[in-house]
Image 1 (cartoon, rainbow, N blue to C red):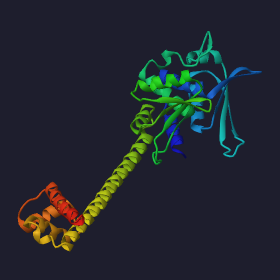
Image 2: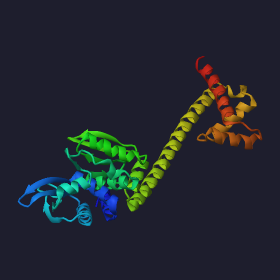
Image 3: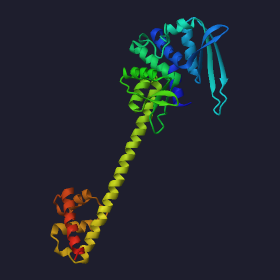
Length: 312
C-alpha cells in the first residue's frame, strides 16, 4: 500500500464519538457524497476508492443515525481498474445533513456550520475526515515533502486552511484541474498534521524516515565540503610548488630568510599538506608557532617574489 493508504487506514480505525464523530462524518459526507432521488425517495450516494474510508462512513452513519445502507463495489473501467466502494444511504437525509451542518433553509452549504468545529477536538476530527475523503501525502522515502487535500470550491479550501491554522499548521491553496488544492510543503508541519488527525504510527514512520534521510543528506553535504576543501588545498599547494620551482630556477632560494626557507622545505616535503598541517609540522620542526593565516602570508611573499622573477 502507499503511505497515503496507510495514513487513511490508521485514521479510519480511530473511533470518535458524539460531537467528534459528527464532525468527522460531516467532512466525509461533504467531500464524498451527492444527493440522489429514486423510487425509495431521497438518498445520499457515497463513493470512494478507499475501502477503510468506506467502512468509516458506514460505521459513523450507523452509530449516529437510523438509516438503511446499501453498499456495493465495482471496478473502475480504466487502465488502473481501481475498486470503487459505493453506498446508498436511505433515511431522513435532510435532517442528517442539517445535523451535520451541511444544510440550511437556503440549501446545501459550501462549508459546515461553525458549531460543527467549535471545539478543537471536533476541528481535528473534521480534518481527519477531510484527509480521508480526498487527501494524499508523499511517502517520507521520496525526495520531496508534500501533503494535500482537494476541495471543490475556493471557499471550502479557505475553511480547511483556517482549521489547519488553529493548530499552527500553515497551508496554501492552488487551483488544479478545476479543483482547489490545499497543500503543505514543510516536513515539520506535515508531521504536525499527521499528529493532529491521530495518525500516530504513520507519524512515527514519517519522522524516522525523515530524520534518517536528513542525517544522510547532512553527512553527504559535509563530505562534499570536505572534498571541495581538499581540492582547493591541492590547487593552492600546486601553485605554491610552481612558485618555489621558479625561485629555484632563478637561484633565489638562497636569498630567502630562514623562516621562508623552512616553509619552502616543508612544502616540498609535504606537497599535499593543508596550511593547518604545515603549521603543525613547522611547530614540530622549529619549535615556533605559526598560525594558518601566518603560513598563508609567507606563501604570499614567496608568490610575490616568484612573480617578479617571471616578469624579468
